[in-house]
Structures are given as C-alpha cells and as structure tokens.
Amino acid sequence: METMSWWQALLLGLIQGLTEFLPVSSSGHLEIGKSLLGVHLPDDLLFTVCVHGATVLSTIVVFWKDLLKLLSGLFRFKLNDETVYIFKLVVSMIPVAIVGIFFKDEVEGFFGNGLRLVGIMLLVTALLLCLAQYLGKGRHGIRYQDAFIIGIAQALAVLPGLSRSGSTIATGLLLGDRKEDVARFSFLMVLVPILGENLLSLVSGDMAQSAVPASALLIGSLAAFVSGWTACKWMIRIVSKGKLVYFAVYCAVVGLLAIVL
Image: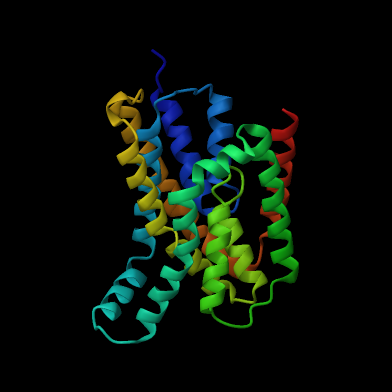
C-alpha cells in the first residue's frame, strides 16, 4: 500500500503553510507539489485536514491580540467597533458558506481538475494582483458591501490555483479599502470557513482509512504551522508596502509551466 514518507509530509506542510497566506494559491501548489513528489494517495483527507488546521492555528497565534479584543468587545453585548467588525466578518462568510455547503462539488466538477486548471487559475490570480497593484487606491475602511464582495472572491477561490488570499486582498484593494485593513480582514475572515470546511471533511470522510502514518501527520502539521506563522507576518508587511506585482509574475510563470507540463 502506497504511503507518505516523513520528508514528503515535511515539504507538503511547508508548501501549505507558506502558500495559504502568500497570494499564490495553496491548493494549486499542493497539487503541483504532490505531482512533483509522486504523492498519489486516495486516502490523504486526514493529512489535508491536519495541515489546514495547523495554518489556522498559526493565524490565531499571529492575531491573538486582535481576536481577544474582538471577543471582549462582542461580550459587552452592545454595538461598538468590535461588534461591527465581527458583523462584517460574518457578512464576508455568507458567499463561501453557500458555495461550500451546497455547490462545491458542482463547481469543481464543472471546471474539472488537474494541473491545467491550476495553471489557468494561477494566471487569473496573476491578473488580479496586477490590477490591484496599479489600480487599487486605499481611500477608506472596509464597508459592509465591501465585506460581501470580498466574500464572493473567497468563495470563488474554491477552484484550485485561484489564490484565496490573493483574490480577497486584490478585491479589497480594487474596492478602495486601505492596505492594512484589507490584509488583516483577509486573514481573519478565513478562520471560520477553514474550520468549517475541515469539520465537513471530517464528518463526510473516513478517517480510519488514512494512508498517511501518524509521524507524517505530525511532521506535516508542524511544518505547516511554522511556515504559516512566518508567511502570515511576512504578507502583512508585503501588502502594506504594495509589492504584489512580484507575486503576480511568479503566479504567471508557475501557471504557464503547469499548463505546458
């Protein structure tokens, strides 16, 4: 029975953690990484859940002060800046909840799978990042309508190769939201959807048939946590400095290679 070695788990965990927050598509890079490493496991759902959970934990560690402030404001049970911000986060989750619960399989089935789709979506990501780099003007904070549109961008990122962070950050910048606000909002808005997706995967999947050994699960999760923590902090600085065009070039090159190869 084919399995996953510790070094394959290490590399895939690093890829997941880094690309979850950098605007280059974690799902697309995981597909490319598995293809290059020769990992073709029919029962690696538990590994995917573990490395995604590790990246969520890294986000919580980076933003623990923000999350604590939001929760303390929420439990004052009155309308304040914290509750308004949480309401906007909830609004942003509506599109991805609808797509994730009712239409994910249909969307993936309609568009297909494989490296060709990954390559095409990476080119779309590159285009979005270029538009945000040169057309995005930070004029205001995130409004309710902005939160919903950014949520639509996140829902569309169910397609492998279309970067979730790239799509949400670029959309926010194109709507005129300030850079620092967009980066923070983009990372906080993903916490509940990723946890919800993992929960649905656990409920619908058969964890007992995982072909990934426990040592590989642990190594992959630790790698995803460390690289995710690093990438999250790094991405905040990158967005504030407006250096998204470099990632656009990278996505375009990798996308073309995925299509050709």
